Image (cartoon, rainbow, N blue to C red; front, side, top):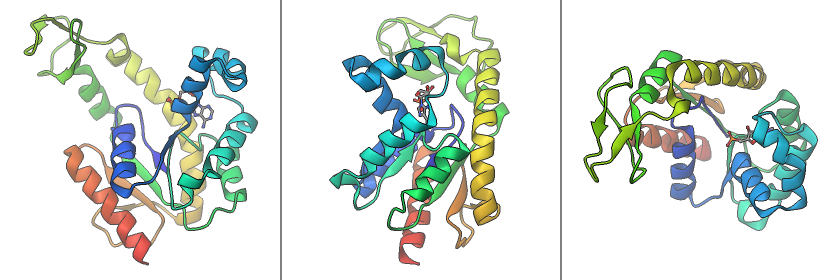
Length: 224
Ligand code: AMP
């Protein structure tokens, strides 16, 4: 299970680790967005909530996850990304009595670092490639080195918006983290020989180093 603030690289790491371990990457957000796009009964039920940025009900999301985890491809393991988001969802996950142990991986990055990281992110308005530029206030114009288009800062990446998104994340993730902290104690950190099922990984380093630490943690826990 991956937990981490927006801009921490959580989604990227979840995808990488799923691919390295050949297990499915189960993102509740992806499943819901696909349902909305397909206009399925589930999609029609959740479309408004998704558009408003609210949380889908615990009942709907728990049923969706229960069904997905029952699929054959999840029998050897899976990555959960975006679930559980409430303590009730965490309890429901326990009640599913899945075989094996649940590992909680927190991608830890401070708010200031995320604001810095996202505010230096630019998207080319012509070729849509994303890249990082030297810190600035976002008002200066730079040309895309690939196609010459304008590099622009997404509205979502404005520092004030990022701070708001981080505050929302903290209010939602806090209780879920407390739930697992109460069970495992405070998370171990990478490099420590933790025997716990809960680790905090410093997400500020190079993405390859983060992936390596996560895989080492999973291997240690698999072998224990
Ligand atoms: P995400 O891509 O994880 O940010 O999810 C996109 C949207 O899907 C969220 O803003 C919620 O509306 C909904 N969603 C995803 N996962 C959950 C969940 N575990 N509980 C409730 N709503 C969820």
